[in-house]
Image 1 (cartoon, rainbow, N blue to C red):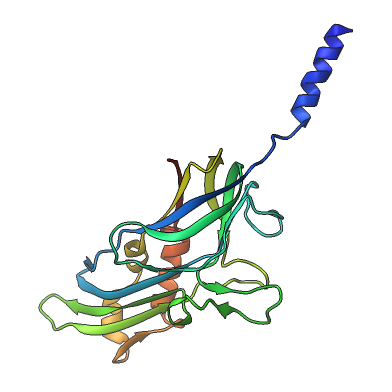
Image 2 (image 1 turned 120 degrees about the vertical axis):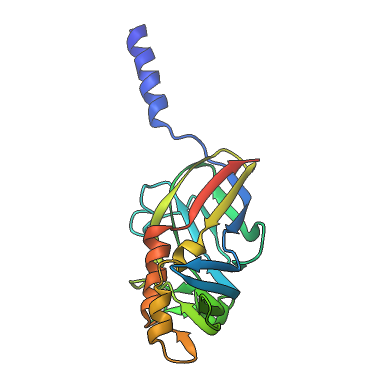
Length: 235
């Protein structure tokens, strides 16, 4: 009987969930973007590079999609405009939520398609109502520079969904002595563009809008080649 009683206590303790505590901790973004780099023989110089991030929702499920993550373990509710050319970390606001195991994240990049909206809506802090805006010059070696402008929109595919419905994010949130760093690699996104083809075929002035191959190339870089990394650390 004593053995059965002990086994019952073990089973009961296994069924009980660990109590969760409310936490709030800081989030930052970092970027590796230099103001000048060379891509396949084309010199790219940037005078402007702005990026909208947020909101973001962290989930205990392995998928951050709204269908599988009914309640967030943490969230960043604000939308921040990040200067990708600025050195050092930039504040993304506060992650508010609970202790526990984070396994995935979903997020928007300044453009939202809410359940109550009939169309995609930009945040007031999104650069010129886009997810990203780049401006600068392009030039082949020995040739004069030509100005260019590129806008990128990362749009939710479905009504009520986030622009990036699920992405990896792993951490054990034990208390508020936590920091989140979102690592952005925009140079890798821009290197997906065939800048030589842009110089050969684009109309002047060079304005690369959301229907251009350059726009789609940046989306491949962002979503496939080098998506944002979510790194949690203990303070």
